[in-house]
Length: 537
Image 1 (tube, rainbow, N blue to C red):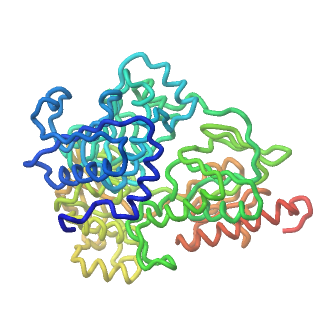
Image 2 (image 1 turned 120 degrees about the horizontal axis):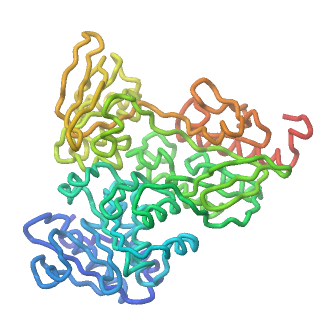
Image 3 (image 1 turned 180 degrees about the horizontal axis):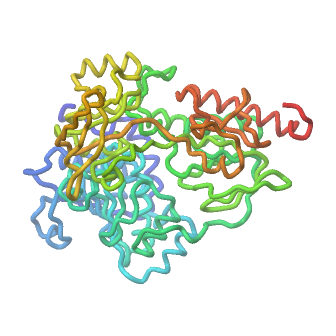
């Protein structure tokens, strides 16, 4: 990029201009920079704000060298620091609003300008219980797909209660000392009044409850208790769920998709996808964004809404979520799978403090040649190791067998990258004081253990099916917990279907997409002519 090249290209400028038309009142932005520290991030922030302010007259930008009167007034001690509408709200961004955080920064501008936030009426009502000050800190990275949704909730809270709630969004790489101080080496991590209340993306209701109580908790309220009528409830918004939603709605089936975490599932945190037809190479998050946009044009998709229970009724099923109650005729479970844990000493203790299950989310912290281990031998482990190597970490792969299970293409990439591999080795323990700093690895042939100095351990040893709802419905599962289905994606329970990684077998995006389409077409046929009434299947 030359000095004359804009950060925002012409096409993006036109899109942003349309988005910024939603702004109502002018928003003041104050950026504190330095010519001696964090220079690339300060330059990026300055250029971004300057270009954005040229797209609308609603942005009033002040860029000030740290150490001046405004720095003293607002107590600014590090750069880049960005204050959003400091005349009205207490919203601070510590670090450049880059990568994934750019999206939530733009959303913050619109919310600050209009005063209208993303919080539900029930959440706003719950926040009115607050009478004491709350400071929310959320640690983020520009590569984390989970962070924007959590960040948006915190910014919304500060806008709803400007005299009580202050919000700080802290980028962990640019503010490494704060990340270490708070032991926030994985993202997102949420602190209220400097007390850790949540790791990872949280449902809105739980986040609000923890802000009110300033402690870890469980959501004690639900947004909308009015029963909603739908034909089909899809649980999970990964490739299978999104595809099924498209096919179902096109077939005239009124569908709602509930996703307790982030849209896209495991694919959204996959650094690079190289085997999906139509894309030679594409970031997993980008691919899922494309799918999600198409699905959203058809179906009702709720991110951050968890299905809590389902019971059978005369008309089909009644599903209670963290926000509402749904009466539906059929259920499609596409909840996918969750990362497996090793179950070794120190793993739980140092989770978020050096132990991670998401290289895309947390790897950014370790990019300055910091020593990390990736544990596993499959495609995910190989992909994670290559990603960490490419962003600048010092990576070693640890695998319990004598050869990897990853595709040959990935194995060749590992060889080309020079990543060392410890074969026939198992991670036995992780140790440290406040954060992880050592790993105990055993050579399974020689029965000899060594201690390695490392700062991060990324575990990629496979997945466990997220089958809780299936089990509660009495759906048949196999010995590993995966849902058993027939060739049309029907389960053992009439009216309940499953697709994607939750069914086991070949865990590929194309497989999930195919199964999602098959499931939707099967549901279309079965709702028209229920096999459980006719005996046909």
